[in-house]
Image (tube, one colour):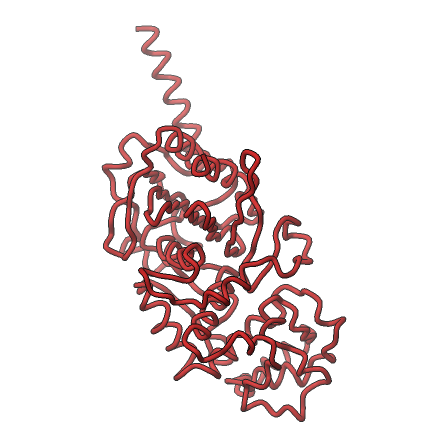
Length: 398
C-alpha cells in the first residue's frame, strides 16, 4: 500500500509540475483524440486573446483531414521516442512559448503536435515568413513566363510604367530584383519622412508608393546597397509582381499558388498601396505551411506540377549574402528571402533552406532527407531552432 501511495504521489507531482506551465500533457491516448480546433466562440478572438490549450496534443500518427496532405506514421521506435520527448519538452515550456511542431517525411505528415495557442484549423500570423511566400510568388511568375531570369538584373523601375523616373533620386536605376530579393535595394528614408508620407495615403496607392519612396530616399549607391533587413525591399518585389502578371498580384497569388496548393483558410492583408503585403500580415495554418515547404523541398513541384521556376529556386536557395543583423545567427546565409544553413550530423553536412518569421515561425526543409519541419510560436527570444533540429534531423539521417 505504501509503495502504491508513493507512486501515486510521484505521478501527481509530475502532472502538477507540467500543469503549472499552462499545459497538461497526456500522450498515452493522443492517437485516439482529434487535433484541437478553434471553437466557434474563439473564432472572433485575436490570436493574443486565444486561451492556452489545457492539454497538449502530440501525435505520431496524424489524421487525414482531406486537405491535400498525405499522412503517415512515425514507425521507427527510437525516432518516435526522441521526437515525442522533444514535443513534451516544448509543451513544458523548456524552449519558450511555442504552439506547434509538425514533421513531414517522404511526402507524408508523420508527426503533429499543438500546444498553448496552437490549433489545427487556426490560420495564425507568419510574421516575416511571409517574405518567402512573396519570393515564391515571383518564382511562379517566372515559371509562367511573365518574367525571365535575366529580368532579375534589370532596373526594377523599368517594370513600373506608372513611375516618373525623371523625379527619382540619383542611382534609382541601380535597384534590381536581385538586389531587392537579397535586402540590398538601398532605399534610405527616415522614419519621420515615412510617417509624413503615410499622412496622405492616397498618394501611396499602387505604384505611387514606389514613386514617393524613390523621390524621398537618399541617393542609391554602393554604400546604401548593403544588406539591410526589410527596408522596403519586399514592397518593391510585390510592386513588380503586380505590374507584370495578368490582373493583380492578389488575384495571381490566389489563382496560381493558394488555389493550386488547396489553401482556403488564410488571411493575406493589403498594404497601404492596396497591393498584398509582401513581408508580413499573412496568416496560415501549420498544415498549410507544410505545403509551402513542399515547394522548397521538391524543387518547385506540387503534386507533379512545376509551380515555381527551378532555375529561380536553384539561385534563390543558395547563400547569396551574409545577413548583417546581430540577431541573425552567423551560420545563416540569405538567398531570395530564403535562408540557408548547413546542419552537421554524424560527420556529414545537410543543406537546409527555411522561411523564418519572428516569434518562432519556421518552415525548414532538407531536400536530401525529404524532410520538412514546421514550427509555430509566439516566443520573444525565439531560440528553439537549434534544439529542435538537434533532435529531429539525426533520427531521419541514420
